[in-house]
Every structure is written in C-alpha cells, then in structure tokens.
Length: 240
Ligand SMILES: NC(=O)c1ccc[n+]([C@@H]2O[C@H](COP(=O)([O-])OP(=O)(O)OC[C@H]3O[C@@H](n4cnc5c(N)ncnc54)[C@H](O)[C@@H]3O)[C@@H](O)[C@H]2O)c1
Image (cartoon, rainbow, N blue to C red):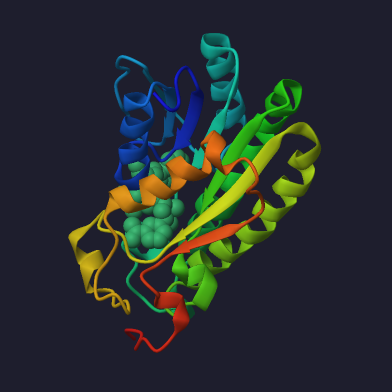
C-alpha cells in the first residue's frame, strides 16, 4: 500500500509500460486516471479518459474531470509516445518520411508531455506537492538515423525535466526522466542489441518509475535515469 489514496495520472495507459504501471499503482493503493487516445473501461480505482495528448484543450478538460472526481493530482507519468515510423507504419528513411509522421513524432513525444505538465502544474503548486515522470528513449541519448523526429523529441524531454525540476523545487514538486533501451512491450524489441544481451521486462521499467515516484526518492529531481542494459555505453552495431 505504498501509494495508498494517491491520485495518479498516466498518459498512454492502455498499452505497454503505461498499462503495467496503472495496475501496479492500483495494487499499491492508488487511484489511477488513464489518459489514452484509445477507449478503455472504468474499473474499480481506474478512470479511463479519452485524451489525445497532442491537443491541449483535450488534456485540460480531462484534468478538470480528474480534479472533480479526485480533488488532487499526486503523480503524473507521461507514457504516451512511440516512434512515428512504427506507429504510422511509414518504414522509410528520414529523407522520405512524410511531414505528418514527423509532426506525430514531435507532437506525441514532446508537445504532449509539455502540455500535460502545463495542465497539471497549477494544481501541484496549489498542493505544494507532486511528482512528474517523463519517459525518454535510448534514441534520444545516442541519436538515431532511423528515427530522427523520435530521437529529437526524446532529447527535448531532458530540458523539460530539468526545467520542471527547477520550477517545482520551491513548491515540493519533483520531476524525473526514465530512459529505457529496448523493452519487451513487443516481441520484436528482443532483436535490439544491448551489452546485457537482452531487452528489459516491462516490469523492470515500472519498478524504477514506482521508486522514483515514491517518498523514498524525495531527494531526487531533475535527473535522467537510463535503464538500457548498457546500450548507451556504445560498442553496439546499430541496425541500418
Ligand atoms: N517499448 C520500448 O522498447 C520503449 C523503449 C524506449 C522508450 N519507450 C517509450 O516508453 C513509452 C511507452 O512505450 P510502450 O512501448 O509502452 O508504448 P505502447 O505503444 O505499448 O503504448 C503507447 C500508448 O500510448 C497511446 N497513445 C498514442 N498516441 C497517443 C496520443 N496522441 N494521446 C494519448 N495516448 C496516445 C497508445 O494508444 C498506447 O496505449 C513511450 O514514450 C516510448 O517512446 C519504449
């Protein structure tokens, strides 16, 4: 019951890391508000909100709804994201990538977390408490010739994380970033090489986020935690 009665907002809550995390928080006593572009059902301690994180008005309306139902926001985890080439099924190199795909990559992965922060920060300032987690990617650390928009957006989250940490410091608000290498949200992620010769289990990423959003991590803010099996050390032959 580490998160008993905490109010948690998770974007991208209907799949992968966000879905596992929603279950973990609920198991540990929290109430979760899931923001996702796809539909989901409410359940005990889970409120599903249909939200496109590219749209600020959409987010703002759902945050009003969260506050009407739960009265506060303790934790926000920005999980909505992904590579535009994969999600929009545009398997072409950057020179040929459509502007729509580039916009999707920047908007979901960077604009979304900025909008989420803007929509939640006033409530956290009022409460004088809160934790925000941004999810990066190893592509944002190393660069990626095959996912230029994705890599750019994920690097941008470093600035967002540090800026929110500085802004929040006077109000008891922390902001951290978790940067995974390959995660087994999809079987094909096991093909992405790491020095540890495997991809992460989704649970391993969830565990780090749970720790960073717990009271045990009260002195941690502005930091970017790599959880990548050593991929950022280099020495890996990147696929073309
Ligand atoms: N899986 C990996 O190997 C991996 C590696 C590094 C970083 N990440 C990052 O971790 C995060 C979660 O990844 P995942 O693999 O669990 O993703 P996923 O594709 O399994 O889930 C993403 C969720 O985001 C939702 N979503 C997409 N667009 C949205 C929008 N505009 N508004 C609201 N919701 C939207 C989707 O409907 C989906 O439920 C992403 O930010 C991703 O970039 C994942």
